[in-house]
Picture 1: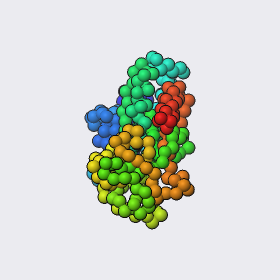
Picture 2: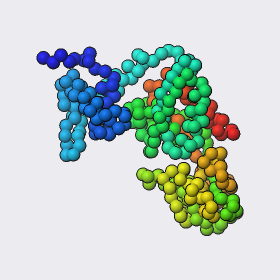
Picture 3: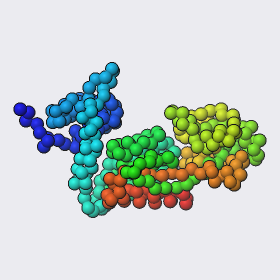
Length: 307
């Protein structure tokens, strides 16, 4: 008879199990959780003995979850939430708190919001470390499976257990090197220029670019880079244009001049708004520490929008 029973269950094993269940790979689960493959395999073997099920079986070059493993997935999430609630304190004092945070964001949010937010957290907390994760196209699983504490994106995932709040609203403007050219003064001037833009590795375009294409407007895109941080090098010293969120003029694009996009009239400008949201899982809604973090993010966004 096995000497392992339900009392040998622990949160780490459940977290690893959920990661393998989601990723369908021991290697990917280990990478996500920043542990070794052997650690994942060891915990899975322990769980197999406890639940008396193989949990995952080989299928071609990969693995698939058994029917019992899929059924256990939601129970495992509920158990982890219960453990989290059990360990959570009723009070939160920033002066004595030490936090390890995981915030998912793409390059615009990383550049615009997170450096200033981290400075605020360092000033207020006894200790803090931050791991910034790429959000890519955000999914509900990022929050449901606790891969991040907070997600910041113009397009937050939707779900009955996912909460969100608007942080700030921006608009697109035209950036250029004033040493090489003047601001585009007409529709023809704008359309006739060569442009630098952002196309993400998954081929996702900026909303501004997608709406122009949907309206049948074609520009001469000279260069497409995979993130905002790549734009300045291809704009500096040239007569090219880049249509980007205006708030970047205070950080990444501060070396460049800017002007309204002459293509857009007042009505079109309203359609070109860029809204940034923060999203979190309902499990953290009443957590005092998480509530404090969200308030700091809101305050930081207000300062950025007003500066």
